[in-house]
Image (cartoon, rainbow, N blue to C red; front, side, top):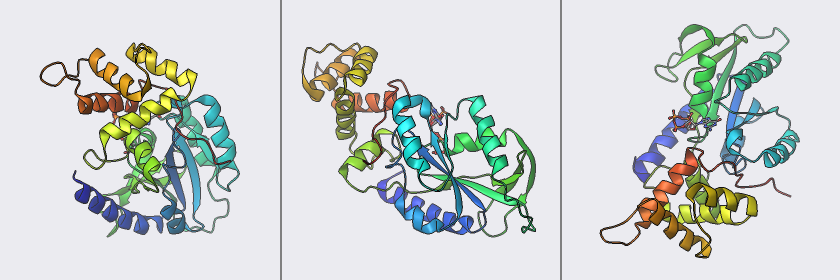
Length: 277
Ligand code: G4P
């Protein structure tokens, strides 16, 4: 999708989201555990008002355990329950169901079922979580007239009706750093950001600490013979055979390879930001 097409798509999706939010009693906001603050869209806060919410810190298998613990403490200071999560782990889906079960409104002031929807920026794992929950659904409960065409409420075992399509939020590019980080975790469409700058930034994040530097070096079998991120990137290109015609390293291809390795979790664990002090 091109830049303009993508932003048009996300704006339409956000409009739809705004409408759907009014229909639900609980919103599940999915964040990337490696980038919890930057994978949030502050415009969403306004949109939600006082709507009940749970925060899911997803992809904890790709993040650093200690950092996730710090984020959990930080986010728990807010009024919403926070769940650290790995959408690929069965036990975590059970934990989520338990939490959802405990969050059902107690008073029977509702004449209709309690409703829930999943939201988040691209690539944080919304569809994976939704599909995992849907694998354990009880019944389809019908279309939603007029709002999200083709969408349905699905009755979950834990007593919530869940919208069967996730709500999309556009990534919030608050500054250059945020753009680089969001590009790294795969939340920006290809062609809408500079892959080479992004991969360079990502390498610098790994080089910043001994532990993550070791992860990077071990994975690519890089030797610290050339200093600096650019030398490392060139070396990775050489090792992985990313060449232009002749012997010149193809830096774009190398950058794409690094981003792809990172996004599929091959370079885990790393957390890309800590909670504000
Ligand atoms: P989205 O709806 O928010 O856009 O995200 P989606 O569920 O499509 O997930 C994006 C990618 O992240 C998928 O990988 C998915 O498998 C992966 N993913 C989701 N949750 C987790 C998690 O907790 N841990 C890890 N390690 N990965 C997770 P993909 O390569 O794009 O697709 P697939 O080949 O895995 O299906």
